[in-house]
Image 1 (cartoon, helix red, strand yellow):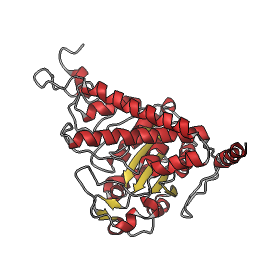
Image 2 (spheres, rainbow, N blue to C red; image 1 turned 90 degrees about the vertical axis):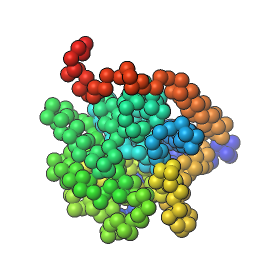
Image 3 (cartoon, helix red, strand yellow; image 1 turned 180 degrees about the vertical axis):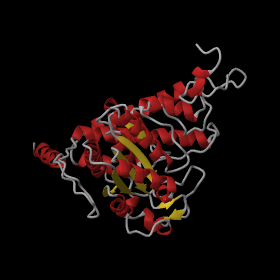
Image 4 (cartoon, rainbow, N blue to C red; image 1 turned 60 degrees about the horizontal axis):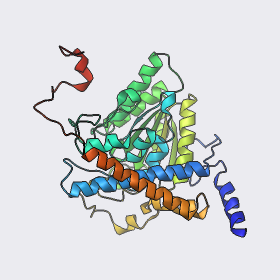
Length: 364
């Protein structure tokens, strides 16, 4: 009885509308009341776990020579990625442009996991029909533009999608785009964010400051104390958060999305974290010092979220174990299906560009 009372108190405290772990470096305070329920937190953990286990499977297949091309995982970035992708709403016309470490956000936004598996395995049944690199996948008509390797460029792509909606007289939509700290040094990032600010587009840009652009540390990338300092220069709202804290991520992005949807213009969210892997599976990350690994932002967001679920009694250990087993089974079923599907046949493919197929002769 005493244990149930303790859990009830903690559960109530955990759902109070607040922005936990928000840095003092916030240029617009979180005046919007937000509330993350226990159920939403557990659902976010499930989404994070799905991305983590999916990418662990992909990594194993890559090491076994079953995947052509590179593999880049989002280990340590799942909370930050999910919090944006999982709180955008495709039913309202929202769009989401994720990058190579945004499996959690992509899946949460609505990308079928089988699409990702098919693309990594080069299957003709995938959205890119096995023609493109294993990370360049998307369904633009469903609000998911394909990932672009030229970092920072996706912001201008999302801007274009939002402008098109404006010209068509639509309203109530939000665009989400992601970038790393390295991408913020590109001209494309500056031009895209500047345009969004001038046009007051409903854009939420998530910058994962993972301390390294490949192997280049942030001290060699920018001179400001925090990337969120740049928000003032663009005339937009900025937030700097501990991106290892799932609750902080969920609360902050919920606030940012609501403000963008209400017409308050672009919202810049900078998440402090550490990439818990190399730049890709080919990279051993030997350049990352032990001080970074053992620091606050070197913590594993997935493990921290799991601890909070149990500590605050969001789920019982038995229910959480069942959830985790179900995710593992789902991953295995997804890959079993994808591995059994057809690979492209270059002798039979017509090689026309997918987006212009209707312009070809003989198209029906």
